[in-house]
Length: 497
Image 1: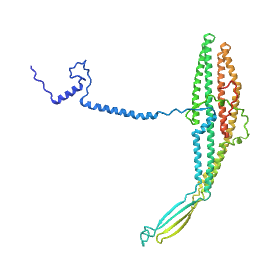
Image 2: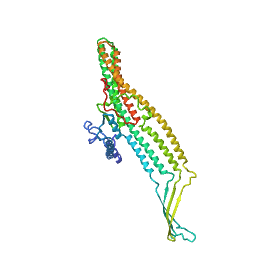
Image 3: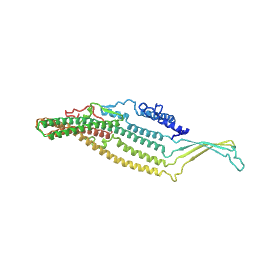
Protein backbone atom coordinates (compact mmCIF):
# COMPACT_ATOMS: atom_id res chain seq x y z
CA UNK A 1 0.00 0.00 0.00
CA UNK A 2 1.53 3.26 -1.09
CA UNK A 3 1.46 5.99 1.44
CA UNK A 4 0.40 9.38 0.33
CA UNK A 5 2.43 12.54 0.78
CA UNK A 6 3.05 13.65 4.36
CA UNK A 7 0.79 16.40 5.60
CA UNK A 8 2.39 19.81 5.68
CA UNK A 9 2.68 21.54 9.04
CA UNK A 10 0.84 24.73 9.63
CA UNK A 11 2.79 28.05 10.03
CA UNK A 12 2.16 28.10 13.82
CA UNK A 13 3.47 24.56 14.15
CA UNK A 14 6.58 25.42 12.16
CA UNK A 15 7.28 28.39 14.48
CA UNK A 16 6.94 26.20 17.60
CA UNK A 17 9.27 23.60 16.11
CA UNK A 18 11.82 26.25 15.22
CA UNK A 19 11.72 27.66 18.75
CA UNK A 20 12.16 24.20 20.28
CA UNK A 21 15.04 23.46 17.89
CA UNK A 22 16.67 26.77 18.74
CA UNK A 23 16.22 26.06 22.43
CA UNK A 24 18.08 22.77 22.25
CA UNK A 25 20.39 23.43 19.31
CA UNK A 26 24.05 22.62 20.12
CA UNK A 27 26.20 25.67 20.48
CA UNK A 28 28.13 26.30 17.32
CA UNK A 29 26.47 23.40 15.40
CA UNK A 30 24.50 24.10 12.19
CA UNK A 31 21.99 21.26 12.69
CA UNK A 32 21.05 18.27 14.74
CA UNK A 33 23.23 16.02 12.59
CA UNK A 34 26.53 17.38 13.97
CA UNK A 35 28.71 14.76 15.67
CA UNK A 36 28.51 14.82 19.46
CA UNK A 37 32.26 14.66 19.86
CA UNK A 38 32.80 17.94 18.01
CA UNK A 39 29.67 19.68 19.14
CA UNK A 40 28.87 19.23 22.88
CA UNK A 41 25.30 19.63 23.90
CA UNK A 42 24.71 22.94 25.68
CA UNK A 43 21.72 25.06 26.47
CA UNK A 44 21.11 27.76 23.89
CA UNK A 45 19.01 30.69 25.00
CA UNK A 46 15.87 31.45 23.09
CA UNK A 47 15.85 34.85 21.33
CA UNK A 48 13.49 36.48 23.84
CA UNK A 49 15.48 35.24 26.81
CA UNK A 50 18.71 36.51 25.24
CA UNK A 51 17.42 40.06 25.62
CA UNK A 52 16.25 39.60 29.26
CA UNK A 53 19.20 37.83 30.89
CA UNK A 54 21.94 40.43 30.05
CA UNK A 55 19.79 43.20 31.54
CA UNK A 56 19.23 41.20 34.72
CA UNK A 57 22.95 40.47 35.04
CA UNK A 58 23.72 44.17 34.61
CA UNK A 59 21.22 45.11 37.34
CA UNK A 60 22.76 42.50 39.65
CA UNK A 61 26.27 43.90 39.04
CA UNK A 62 25.07 47.44 39.76
CA UNK A 63 23.46 46.28 43.01
CA UNK A 64 26.68 44.57 44.10
CA UNK A 65 28.72 47.68 43.30
CA UNK A 66 26.31 49.87 45.29
CA UNK A 67 26.56 47.50 48.27
CA UNK A 68 30.37 47.63 48.19
CA UNK A 69 30.40 51.42 47.91
CA UNK A 70 27.99 51.71 50.85
CA UNK A 71 30.22 49.55 53.05
CA UNK A 72 33.46 51.38 52.24
CA UNK A 73 32.61 54.57 54.24
CA UNK A 74 31.72 52.44 57.25
CA UNK A 75 35.00 50.58 57.04
CA UNK A 76 36.89 53.83 56.62
CA UNK A 77 35.10 55.33 59.62
CA UNK A 78 35.82 52.26 61.76
CA UNK A 79 39.54 52.42 61.06
CA UNK A 80 41.34 54.76 63.44
CA UNK A 81 44.02 56.50 61.41
CA UNK A 82 45.23 58.56 64.33
CA UNK A 83 48.69 57.71 65.67
CA UNK A 84 48.69 55.78 68.96
CA UNK A 85 48.92 57.91 72.07
CA UNK A 86 52.16 57.50 73.98
CA UNK A 87 51.56 56.14 77.49
CA UNK A 88 52.18 58.29 80.54
CA UNK A 89 55.26 57.04 82.37
CA UNK A 90 54.79 57.37 86.12
CA UNK A 91 57.84 57.47 88.38
CA UNK A 92 56.39 58.81 91.65
CA UNK A 93 53.07 59.47 93.38
CA UNK A 94 53.64 63.22 93.10
CA UNK A 95 53.84 62.97 89.32
CA UNK A 96 50.72 60.82 89.13
CA UNK A 97 48.75 63.15 91.40
CA UNK A 98 49.81 66.24 89.46
CA UNK A 99 48.77 64.61 86.19
CA UNK A 100 45.40 63.59 87.63
CA UNK A 101 44.70 67.05 89.02
CA UNK A 102 45.44 68.45 85.56
CA UNK A 103 43.41 66.17 83.28
CA UNK A 104 41.00 64.24 85.52
CA UNK A 105 37.37 64.46 84.29
CA UNK A 106 36.14 64.08 87.86
CA UNK A 107 37.95 67.24 88.91
CA UNK A 108 36.61 69.12 85.90
CA UNK A 109 33.11 68.12 86.94
CA UNK A 110 33.70 69.38 90.48
CA UNK A 111 35.08 72.64 89.09
CA UNK A 112 31.99 73.06 86.91
CA UNK A 113 29.77 72.58 89.96
CA UNK A 114 31.68 75.31 91.79
CA UNK A 115 31.31 77.63 88.80
CA UNK A 116 27.56 77.00 88.80
CA UNK A 117 27.33 78.11 92.43
CA UNK A 118 29.39 81.20 91.62
CA UNK A 119 26.89 82.00 88.89
CA UNK A 120 24.10 81.72 91.49
CA UNK A 121 25.96 84.24 93.64
CA UNK A 122 26.10 86.62 90.68
CA UNK A 123 22.38 86.23 90.11
CA UNK A 124 21.58 86.75 93.78
CA UNK A 125 22.99 90.30 93.75
CA UNK A 126 20.73 91.47 90.93
CA UNK A 127 17.69 93.64 91.69
CA UNK A 128 14.28 93.28 90.02
CA UNK A 129 13.95 94.86 86.59
CA UNK A 130 11.67 97.90 86.12
CA UNK A 131 8.47 97.37 84.17
CA UNK A 132 7.36 99.52 81.24
CA UNK A 133 3.59 100.01 81.11
CA UNK A 134 1.26 101.63 78.63
CA UNK A 135 -2.52 101.89 78.24
CA UNK A 136 -4.96 103.49 75.78
CA UNK A 137 -8.53 104.44 76.74
CA UNK A 138 -11.70 106.09 75.35
CA UNK A 139 -11.60 105.12 71.69
CA UNK A 140 -13.77 102.99 69.40
CA UNK A 141 -16.90 103.28 71.58
CA UNK A 142 -20.55 103.13 70.59
CA UNK A 143 -23.92 104.48 71.76
CA UNK A 144 -24.68 107.70 73.60
CA UNK A 145 -23.40 110.92 72.09
CA UNK A 146 -20.83 109.05 70.06
CA UNK A 147 -17.99 111.16 71.46
CA UNK A 148 -15.70 108.17 71.91
CA UNK A 149 -16.22 106.50 68.54
CA UNK A 150 -13.10 108.05 67.03
CA UNK A 151 -9.66 108.80 68.44
CA UNK A 152 -10.44 112.42 69.35
CA UNK A 153 -11.06 111.55 73.03
CA UNK A 154 -8.19 109.03 73.23
CA UNK A 155 -6.39 108.93 76.59
CA UNK A 156 -2.93 107.36 76.43
CA UNK A 157 -0.84 106.53 79.49
CA UNK A 158 2.85 105.54 79.53
CA UNK A 159 4.89 104.90 82.66
CA UNK A 160 7.29 102.76 84.66
CA UNK A 161 6.72 100.41 87.61
CA UNK A 162 9.38 99.14 89.98
CA UNK A 163 9.06 96.35 92.52
CA UNK A 164 10.92 97.12 95.75
CA UNK A 165 11.99 94.10 97.78
CA UNK A 166 11.21 94.38 101.47
CA UNK A 167 12.16 92.24 104.42
CA UNK A 168 15.86 91.89 103.46
CA UNK A 169 15.29 89.49 100.57
CA UNK A 170 18.30 90.62 98.55
CA UNK A 171 20.67 90.45 101.51
CA UNK A 172 19.34 87.02 102.46
CA UNK A 173 19.78 85.84 98.88
CA UNK A 174 23.36 87.06 98.79
CA UNK A 175 24.14 85.42 102.13
CA UNK A 176 22.66 82.09 100.99
CA UNK A 177 24.69 82.23 97.78
CA UNK A 178 27.84 82.92 99.78
CA UNK A 179 27.17 79.97 102.09
CA UNK A 180 26.49 77.76 99.07
CA UNK A 181 29.77 78.93 97.55
CA UNK A 182 31.62 77.84 100.69
CA UNK A 183 30.03 74.39 100.48
CA UNK A 184 30.94 74.11 96.79
CA UNK A 185 34.53 75.17 97.47
CA UNK A 186 34.85 72.52 100.19
CA UNK A 187 33.36 69.94 97.83
CA UNK A 188 35.96 70.89 95.23
CA UNK A 189 38.75 70.55 97.79
CA UNK A 190 37.38 67.19 98.88
CA UNK A 191 37.25 66.05 95.26
CA UNK A 192 40.92 66.97 94.79
CA UNK A 193 41.91 65.04 97.90
CA UNK A 194 39.82 62.04 96.90
CA UNK A 195 41.34 61.96 93.43
CA UNK A 196 44.82 62.13 94.95
CA UNK A 197 44.02 59.29 97.36
CA UNK A 198 42.62 57.11 94.58
CA UNK A 199 45.63 57.75 92.37
CA UNK A 200 48.17 56.97 95.10
CA UNK A 201 46.27 53.82 96.09
CA UNK A 202 46.01 52.66 92.48
CA UNK A 203 49.70 53.41 91.89
CA UNK A 204 50.70 51.40 94.96
CA UNK A 205 48.46 48.55 93.80
CA UNK A 206 50.04 48.56 90.34
CA UNK A 207 53.59 48.57 91.71
CA UNK A 208 52.70 45.82 94.18
CA UNK A 209 51.23 43.75 91.35
CA UNK A 210 54.41 44.19 89.32
CA UNK A 211 56.55 43.08 92.23
CA UNK A 212 54.31 40.12 92.88
CA UNK A 213 55.10 39.01 89.32
CA UNK A 214 58.77 38.83 90.35
CA UNK A 215 57.80 36.87 93.46
CA UNK A 216 55.70 34.38 91.51
CA UNK A 217 58.37 33.94 88.85
CA UNK A 218 60.91 33.23 91.56
CA UNK A 219 58.48 30.73 93.05
CA UNK A 220 58.22 29.06 89.63
CA UNK A 221 62.02 29.01 89.28
CA UNK A 222 62.45 27.33 92.66
CA UNK A 223 59.74 24.84 91.76
CA UNK A 224 61.56 24.02 88.50
CA UNK A 225 64.83 23.47 90.36
CA UNK A 226 63.09 21.24 92.86
CA UNK A 227 61.53 19.27 90.01
CA UNK A 228 64.93 18.68 88.43
CA UNK A 229 66.37 17.55 91.77
CA UNK A 230 63.40 15.28 92.39
CA UNK A 231 63.75 13.64 88.96
CA UNK A 232 67.46 13.13 89.55
CA UNK A 233 66.79 11.41 92.89
CA UNK A 234 64.05 9.30 91.32
CA UNK A 235 66.33 8.23 88.49
CA UNK A 236 69.00 7.41 91.06
CA UNK A 237 66.49 5.27 92.94
CA UNK A 238 66.67 7.25 96.15
CA UNK A 239 63.07 8.57 96.01
CA UNK A 240 59.86 7.04 94.70
CA UNK A 241 58.23 8.29 91.49
CA UNK A 242 55.53 9.98 93.56
CA UNK A 243 57.98 12.69 94.63
CA UNK A 244 58.66 13.68 91.02
CA UNK A 245 54.93 13.78 90.25
CA UNK A 246 54.30 15.97 93.25
CA UNK A 247 57.11 18.32 92.20
CA UNK A 248 55.55 18.51 88.73
CA UNK A 249 52.24 19.59 90.25
CA UNK A 250 53.97 22.26 92.32
CA UNK A 251 55.78 23.61 89.25
CA UNK A 252 52.59 23.75 87.18
CA UNK A 253 50.77 25.57 89.98
CA UNK A 254 53.60 28.08 90.24
CA UNK A 255 53.47 28.77 86.49
CA UNK A 256 49.74 29.42 86.68
CA UNK A 257 50.24 31.79 89.60
CA UNK A 258 52.91 33.69 87.66
CA UNK A 259 50.61 34.10 84.67
CA UNK A 260 47.79 35.29 86.92
CA UNK A 261 50.11 37.83 88.54
CA UNK A 262 51.01 39.22 85.10
CA UNK A 263 47.33 39.65 84.28
CA UNK A 264 46.83 41.50 87.54
CA UNK A 265 49.52 43.98 86.49
CA UNK A 266 47.63 44.79 83.30
CA UNK A 267 44.38 45.23 85.23
CA UNK A 268 46.03 47.47 87.82
CA UNK A 269 47.60 49.66 85.12
CA UNK A 270 44.22 50.04 83.43
CA UNK A 271 42.60 51.16 86.68
CA UNK A 272 45.44 53.60 87.32
CA UNK A 273 44.95 55.12 83.86
CA UNK A 274 41.25 55.58 84.58
CA UNK A 275 41.91 57.34 87.88
CA UNK A 276 44.49 59.65 86.32
CA UNK A 277 42.35 60.32 83.28
CA UNK A 278 44.72 59.24 80.50
CA UNK A 279 44.34 56.49 77.87
CA UNK A 280 47.42 54.49 78.86
CA UNK A 281 49.96 54.47 81.65
CA UNK A 282 53.13 52.57 82.40
CA UNK A 283 55.44 52.46 85.40
CA UNK A 284 59.05 53.54 85.41
CA UNK A 285 61.56 50.77 85.91
CA UNK A 286 62.57 52.01 89.36
CA UNK A 287 60.05 53.01 92.00
CA UNK A 288 62.12 53.77 95.12
CA UNK A 289 59.19 55.48 96.85
CA UNK A 290 57.46 52.11 97.27
CA UNK A 291 60.10 50.90 99.74
CA UNK A 292 59.98 54.14 101.73
CA UNK A 293 57.69 53.73 104.72
CA UNK A 294 59.35 56.42 106.80
CA UNK A 295 59.75 56.34 110.58
CA UNK A 296 57.35 54.66 112.95
CA UNK A 297 54.10 56.70 112.93
CA UNK A 298 53.85 56.26 116.69
CA UNK A 299 51.04 57.83 118.65
CA UNK A 300 49.18 60.47 116.62
CA UNK A 301 49.40 64.08 117.68
CA UNK A 302 47.48 66.03 118.88
CA UNK A 303 45.66 63.59 121.11
CA UNK A 304 42.20 64.94 120.29
CA UNK A 305 41.08 63.35 116.99
CA UNK A 306 38.81 66.32 116.25
CA UNK A 307 41.85 68.58 116.42
CA UNK A 308 43.65 66.27 113.97
CA UNK A 309 40.68 66.76 111.63
CA UNK A 310 41.07 70.53 111.66
CA UNK A 311 42.15 70.56 108.02
CA UNK A 312 39.55 68.07 106.83
CA UNK A 313 37.22 69.55 104.19
CA UNK A 314 34.54 67.03 105.17
CA UNK A 315 34.42 68.32 108.76
CA UNK A 316 34.37 71.93 107.56
CA UNK A 317 31.64 71.08 105.07
CA UNK A 318 29.40 69.76 107.82
CA UNK A 319 29.52 73.14 109.55
CA UNK A 320 29.19 74.99 106.26
CA UNK A 321 26.06 72.97 105.44
CA UNK A 322 24.49 74.08 108.73
CA UNK A 323 25.30 77.72 107.96
CA UNK A 324 23.83 77.24 104.48
CA UNK A 325 20.53 75.95 105.85
CA UNK A 326 20.36 78.75 108.40
CA UNK A 327 20.78 81.26 105.59
CA UNK A 328 18.00 79.47 103.73
CA UNK A 329 15.70 79.81 106.75
CA UNK A 330 16.42 83.55 106.81
CA UNK A 331 15.64 83.82 103.10
CA UNK A 332 12.36 81.93 103.42
CA UNK A 333 11.25 84.17 106.25
CA UNK A 334 12.15 87.25 104.22
CA UNK A 335 10.17 85.86 101.30
CA UNK A 336 7.05 85.93 103.49
CA UNK A 337 7.22 89.76 103.60
CA UNK A 338 5.26 91.17 100.63
CA UNK A 339 7.00 93.50 98.20
CA UNK A 340 5.65 96.92 97.27
CA UNK A 341 5.40 98.07 93.66
CA UNK A 342 5.45 101.79 92.88
CA UNK A 343 4.62 103.30 89.50
CA UNK A 344 4.81 106.65 87.77
CA UNK A 345 2.86 107.40 84.56
CA UNK A 346 2.26 110.23 82.13
CA UNK A 347 -1.30 110.53 80.77
CA UNK A 348 -2.30 112.40 77.64
CA UNK A 349 -5.94 113.52 77.14
CA UNK A 350 -6.74 113.62 73.44
CA UNK A 351 -9.93 115.68 73.72
CA UNK A 352 -8.34 118.65 75.49
CA UNK A 353 -4.67 118.06 74.59
CA UNK A 354 -3.81 118.15 78.28
CA UNK A 355 -1.12 116.13 80.05
CA UNK A 356 -1.17 114.88 83.65
CA UNK A 357 0.97 112.70 85.90
CA UNK A 358 -0.28 109.50 87.54
CA UNK A 359 1.43 107.84 90.53
CA UNK A 360 0.50 104.59 92.19
CA UNK A 361 1.59 101.89 94.58
CA UNK A 362 0.47 98.31 95.17
CA UNK A 363 1.26 95.69 97.77
CA UNK A 364 -0.09 92.14 98.15
CA UNK A 365 -2.21 91.43 101.19
CA UNK A 366 -0.77 88.39 102.95
CA UNK A 367 -4.08 86.87 103.94
CA UNK A 368 -3.36 83.31 102.70
CA UNK A 369 0.15 82.82 101.30
CA UNK A 370 2.78 83.79 103.83
CA UNK A 371 5.31 81.19 102.63
CA UNK A 372 4.42 78.89 105.50
CA UNK A 373 5.51 75.78 103.59
CA UNK A 374 8.86 77.24 102.54
CA UNK A 375 9.66 78.26 106.11
CA UNK A 376 8.68 74.86 107.50
CA UNK A 377 10.75 73.05 104.90
CA UNK A 378 13.82 75.20 105.53
CA UNK A 379 13.58 74.54 109.25
CA UNK A 380 13.32 70.80 108.62
CA UNK A 381 16.38 70.99 106.34
CA UNK A 382 18.26 72.82 109.10
CA UNK A 383 17.40 70.09 111.59
CA UNK A 384 18.52 67.42 109.12
CA UNK A 385 21.82 69.26 108.48
CA UNK A 386 22.53 69.48 112.21
CA UNK A 387 21.82 65.76 112.68
CA UNK A 388 23.97 64.82 109.70
CA UNK A 389 26.77 67.04 111.01
CA UNK A 390 26.77 65.23 114.34
CA UNK A 391 26.70 61.82 112.70
CA UNK A 392 29.30 62.79 110.11
CA UNK A 393 31.64 64.13 112.80
CA UNK A 394 31.46 60.84 114.69
CA UNK A 395 32.07 58.86 111.50
CA UNK A 396 35.09 60.99 110.59
CA UNK A 397 36.60 60.60 114.04
CA UNK A 398 36.08 56.83 114.07
CA UNK A 399 37.41 56.46 110.54
CA UNK A 400 40.51 58.51 111.31
CA UNK A 401 41.30 56.64 114.52
CA UNK A 402 40.86 53.25 112.81
CA UNK A 403 42.98 54.28 109.82
CA UNK A 404 45.75 55.56 112.08
CA UNK A 405 45.76 52.32 114.05
CA UNK A 406 45.84 50.24 110.89
CA UNK A 407 48.65 52.45 109.55
CA UNK A 408 50.78 51.82 112.64
CA UNK A 409 50.07 48.09 112.40
CA UNK A 410 51.01 48.04 108.72
CA UNK A 411 54.29 49.82 109.47
CA UNK A 412 55.15 47.26 112.16
CA UNK A 413 54.25 44.43 109.78
CA UNK A 414 56.54 45.75 107.08
CA UNK A 415 59.36 46.34 109.54
CA UNK A 416 59.05 42.84 111.01
CA UNK A 417 58.90 41.15 107.62
CA UNK A 418 61.94 43.06 106.41
CA UNK A 419 64.14 42.63 109.45
CA UNK A 420 63.22 39.17 110.70
CA UNK A 421 60.83 37.06 108.66
CA UNK A 422 62.25 37.48 105.16
CA UNK A 423 65.95 36.90 106.02
CA UNK A 424 65.02 33.78 108.01
CA UNK A 425 62.84 32.44 105.20
CA UNK A 426 65.57 33.00 102.61
CA UNK A 427 68.15 31.20 104.74
CA UNK A 428 65.82 28.29 105.47
CA UNK A 429 64.93 27.86 101.78
CA UNK A 430 68.59 27.97 100.77
CA UNK A 431 69.61 25.33 103.34
CA UNK A 432 66.66 23.11 102.48
CA UNK A 433 67.37 23.21 98.74
CA UNK A 434 71.04 22.37 99.21
CA UNK A 435 70.33 19.71 101.81
CA UNK A 436 67.68 18.01 99.64
CA UNK A 437 70.23 17.37 96.92
CA UNK A 438 72.51 15.81 99.52
CA UNK A 439 69.70 13.75 101.03
CA UNK A 440 69.60 15.52 104.38
CA UNK A 441 66.07 16.90 104.01
CA UNK A 442 62.91 15.35 102.72
CA UNK A 443 60.93 16.60 99.75
CA UNK A 444 58.15 17.94 101.97
CA UNK A 445 60.61 19.97 104.00
CA UNK A 446 61.94 21.58 100.82
CA UNK A 447 58.44 22.40 99.63
CA UNK A 448 57.56 23.95 102.98
CA UNK A 449 60.71 26.07 102.98
CA UNK A 450 60.15 27.32 99.44
CA UNK A 451 56.47 28.00 100.08
CA UNK A 452 57.35 29.92 103.24
CA UNK A 453 59.89 32.04 101.34
CA UNK A 454 57.49 32.90 98.52
CA UNK A 455 54.65 33.61 100.92
CA UNK A 456 56.85 35.88 103.02
CA UNK A 457 57.93 37.86 99.97
CA UNK A 458 54.33 38.20 98.85
CA UNK A 459 53.25 39.25 102.35
CA UNK A 460 55.93 41.93 102.39
CA UNK A 461 54.77 43.37 99.07
CA UNK A 462 51.14 43.30 100.17
CA UNK A 463 52.02 44.88 103.52
CA UNK A 464 53.87 47.74 101.82
CA UNK A 465 50.93 48.27 99.45
CA UNK A 466 48.52 48.35 102.39
CA UNK A 467 50.78 50.83 104.20
CA UNK A 468 50.75 53.26 101.26
CA UNK A 469 46.98 52.95 100.87
CA UNK A 470 46.41 53.60 104.58
CA UNK A 471 48.82 56.52 104.66
CA UNK A 472 47.01 58.08 101.70
CA UNK A 473 43.71 57.59 103.51
CA UNK A 474 44.99 59.23 106.70
CA UNK A 475 46.40 62.17 104.78
CA UNK A 476 43.14 62.55 102.90
CA UNK A 477 41.13 62.55 106.14
CA UNK A 478 43.41 65.18 107.64
CA UNK A 479 43.05 67.36 104.57
CA UNK A 480 46.55 66.87 103.13
CA UNK A 481 47.46 65.79 99.63
CA UNK A 482 49.22 62.41 99.68
CA UNK A 483 52.98 62.94 99.84
CA UNK A 484 55.90 60.61 100.38
CA UNK A 485 59.40 61.28 101.52
CA UNK A 486 61.78 61.94 98.61
CA UNK A 487 64.56 60.02 100.41
CA UNK A 488 64.01 56.22 100.36
CA UNK A 489 64.88 54.30 103.48
CA UNK A 490 67.69 51.78 103.53
CA UNK A 491 66.32 48.28 103.08
CA UNK A 492 68.11 45.03 103.84
CA UNK A 493 69.06 42.51 101.19
CA UNK A 494 65.72 40.84 101.64
CA UNK A 495 63.87 43.56 99.76
CA UNK A 496 60.69 42.60 97.99
CA UNK A 497 61.97 44.22 94.83
